[in-house]
Image (cartoon, rainbow, N blue to C red; front, side, top):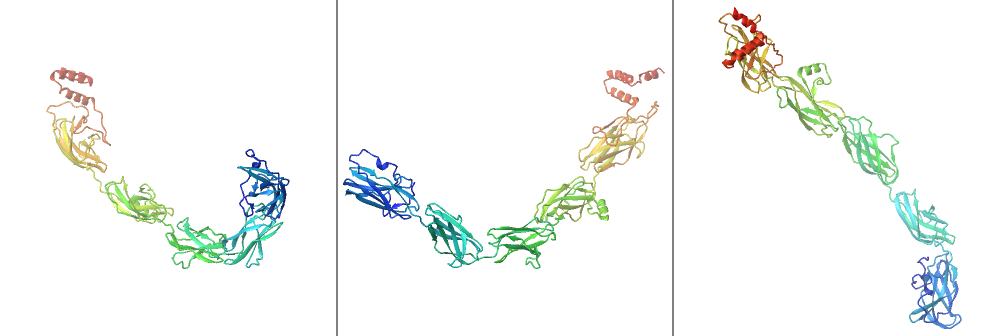
Length: 632
């Protein structure tokens, strides 16, 4: 297919002819023109030629013409020249000049005779002939340059090979138009009939300097030199400092880093740091040469991280900056700062809400820059004093602690912590305590603080009088105050003060507050003196009331008593009897059980009493003994 490049001199070309389109159509209404004769092309150059032909070689007639040409070996299906005017005659010479042809290209063409009859055009082509355009030197379409760095430049060119393979493509450059240096194009050769692009990169140039350049392109036809051009390299400058920062901070170490643009030059860098913002007597790392180098590029590079060597002091503010240097000069970053980590600082507050067994502890914690947790440690005063005397590192180690908290943060601000409730303390005891905080640097035990729990509140007990005293029964009274604590009580009975039977008569647990209690005693010995007292127990201790006494009346007539005096059998208190820790219960004898049963029978209707007593004596084995006694 032909390039759209060719044109007829001075005239626009018509569209491409479809193969055979000029030789077919509606049926002719008149005779077709006589076959013309295609003559050899003339005035051939690399891009121009003149097409020639002869009309009406035998017969004189009115005839028009045009030429068709192509590069595929046929004259049809390519480009058709503008229609020539009709003329009348014999052996009419016709020609059409062409421009914009492709050098070194073979063209096939033919002259076409035309005749217009009415609205129908009849065409007759001549035989095809061929010609080849001459070779042509390459064409330099455009040259340009683009600045890359102060020391480098990119040269570019657009070239038309003019349908011949180029043999070389070279840029010449130098400080004058005499040039003096060369650089090969990339790609180095071309072929074809369309514009193509090439470039080369120049390095090792001087900054802020004007250079001349042009391109030289050669093919077998000859060499073409581009026009002289100029470019000026940019000025070399010192590095450009970007960001600065630190990482991996500890109590004695840190790593410094920065981003630096080397600005097209190999660049060395280091860090300065000191404890004053003016960086007086600053320490430089990494220190002595060779310092680390950054490549000669124009983009930010990471400088560091550089380790400071672990010689820092905990909790100290340090100031630092990066210093970068290339051949153009030195650049210094802005002064930055960091503070090394330290042990957390703590302050415990006064204990609040102190009761007999509880207290609320609070305080403040400063994490000193590291994630920090805390707890309270406490111990009874004697344990604390002993640990201090032993110079223990942690005088609270043998005491107790509250649960470890979650982190209170990693900033450097004081955070209020607590109140934390401490339970299960002992009443009336002095406790020493401290706030303890831990971070990655270590643990801080705060100053010692102390509180004393409220005094113990054992029950208040008063032994009351004995009432309703009978030969074998009595009721003992008492009063007590629970002091608001869970309390149980018991009555103790014995033959003398502070000499009480092991058996105690317990009452139920009591509700809070002051209240009266009583206990009914049965199966006492007639004519005996008894000592008794009321005792009560709560978590703070056991208190017994004063000793009381009563005497049961004697028996009017002598009675045969058992070999051993009967024990107390029944105790009925104002509340149901319950066991009390530390008390014991002794089993009743058969005589005591019989007495209880007889007493119960006497409460029945009269008609049932005799039978009830008979069954009781039979059950407890005393029926026969009673019968023998009646016979005597």
